[in-house]
Image 1 (cartoon, helix red, strand yellow):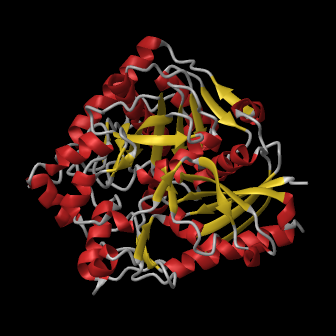
Image 2 (cartoon, one colour; image 1 turned 120 degrees about the vertical axis):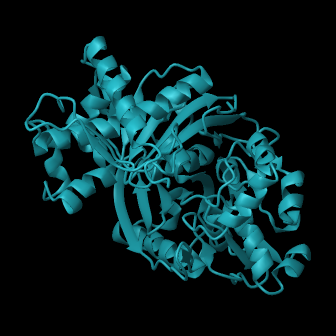
Length: 499
């Protein structure tokens, strides 16, 4: 009798495996880091065999430590670092080059050339993405142009391209499956998110043969099964989603207008826009969230990334040294009722959406002789919440969908004061779940639905347990004044690094 779902969470620095039970509880976890490769400044690579071996080994370890047999696992779900690009030999399974990681900037000049020709508008209209080295398409083109013989072999159908989910599926299935899901396909720069097909015009522009590409499948479907030798017996393979989409599904943000924010080094905000892909007028990304079966419509989202949130707290610790640990920021900031006119704009690497100013720089403004480190700590929490407000307000304007509540996860979501400030500036409830392993849980849910482990999305909503809700308490005039002051501070941070 199947009692568990196995989620594989393949991240940028480590591979994790988590075993979930029917209540969506994590019952066993294993994790393994793997090496990062930096061949030149701005270049980032992984050895694809390290990715596969580490993910296989933690999957075996999590079953062994809990003494779970393959027959007790209903299905395996995969969630992955997005945009990272791998090409391998279809016969041998050997990669032709290292994986080019999403962080890698080697194709920035190629993207600049596409923008200079105006082709970025074509890409924007079809894929919902900005033309940037972040995405997979130009990485594929670089590999075909720079690995000897790669283009000839790709055109002959001898090679396979995939993002990390495809690479894991290929290896798990013993080479039987060359597939990806709609959420990962939507991050490649090659997939038309409105026709739901690889786009011939973009493929021709980047000189990428269709024979190289994986089959695009729904995010929740039984694709096949694992090769028997990997776990001692076959296990169904049943769910795939990119990490941010999986986190949104793990938060059960299934209705239009629902949004989640993952607070990490930076923050990723995704808002469900339903069956409509909403083009952004403000530089947000329009992306596919998931598709729950071949007979189901695609669900879309608006996505906004904030460059510096948790990293601002790290700076208080390591740069200013006014706290000894990240956890100290909450009691320090709680010593004052407000930042008393102090604003901190943590634009250490410029500003993302909705400002999009690479020349903005970090700004601490409004200081007086009465300013203490408590005020600076409070201004830092304000900045995290206000940056999230800016992205969500932009989403509201772009999508004309009112935010009903914000579901939160990630390390900083444990900070009660920050979550209260977030509710206050948004003017809507902030909901923190009891289970915060939302990325892996989303992959588990997608696989479990495909395998019948959960019968429908209602089961997932029943599983979602609220640990705490933070209701807005700030008076409207106080909120408006805080936001107005923030906007003035952001304006003063802009353009600083321009000569």
